[in-house]
Length: 497
Ligand SMILES: [Fe+2]
Image (cartoon, rainbow, N blue to C red; front, top):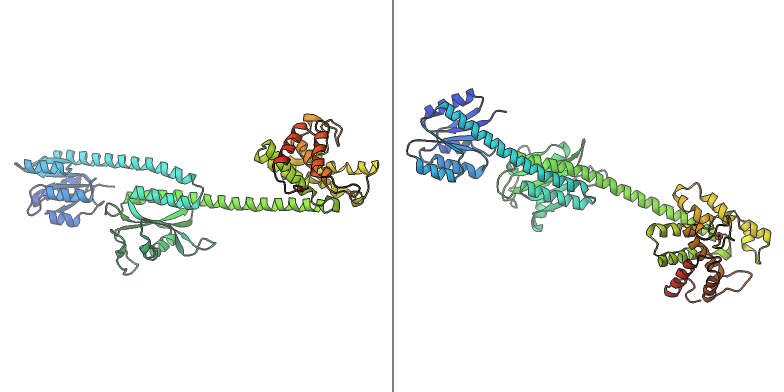
């Protein structure tokens, strides 16, 4: 696109020559015959370069240059000077003027000066863009890392404030489950609480339109925004420039980022808008990801809760098989937990141990109730049938992939440390470690529970049995840890026995 140049001179001939020459070099040229007219034509972002005479009636070129620089510091200004204007030239230099051309001048001199000023401007603009891009990369990387919706929106506001110098920023999201309801403020900063409600109302209409059209809006004066009717002055803004940027992902609008009241009291520039769009686009993607993550997390929690509920129900069903096994799995789970804590097991092993303890006797579902309820000691053949329950339990749980890690514990919870247990006669360290833990917890409960054919032994009797069987039936280190735990911890079970 061609550069646009404003030429200001009170000599009509100079204006005509400059216009004709610069247009022949493909520039777009506008002219003003005095500084007052130039001020009327000028607005930030409209021109790429200003060339002004130094000596003009009422307002000098130096004053005009200063006035322009206050409104757009980056724009280059070339001063056309006459003989004897050296004092003014010094003043102009202090005001940031780019170059001087002494009248009368050659057109080649004008061309060189214009090219140099525009190249310098382009270089400075490129440098500024690179600086912004470097900061944006850091900001968008952090946006992408956010895992919480509230902190994501707050950080978006923080970045937008830094990059655009907006002092009042809000993010509005659609209400309602479907995400298509009226927008409501999700995060806001820069507005005192007493006028927050006013801001909600005043910005809502513009933001709603941006949300529905998914097209960014940038206006110099929010009060004059056409097509939206007469509006009251926005008393809480110091400036009236306003931007509303949709948070878009694909064709779906997720919300709107509103920016107002630029701290340097200028209007938001095209660059401000571009920066806000980049931030909003990244925030939209991050928002979608955060919500997906939350939904997934909820699903996982629901599934886990259902899973543990089913495990507990199966465990209750096992214990309900016989009045003599009532509460057995629950007590074994408590004892196993005590041993696990005393041994310093990690969370994963503790979870495995809990599941195995709750389900260890699931094979008894396939054992006749008459055997479990028998009010006397079992015969050898009856005992052989009961001994099948660890393998039956393993087979019952085999189809559940989520429980595959507890199958060895179920199968081997009746092995003995000396190798005289069942079903495989494993011994010592060949028995899976958590199965050895479960054996101690399971046998301790069996030793200390009520049975139809004997008196209920007390806790002390149970502890001496553990001592007696350490190294033969049980892993001695596990027995030692359990006895230590029984003596120091409340179990809630047998504490008063
Ligand atoms: Fe068992």
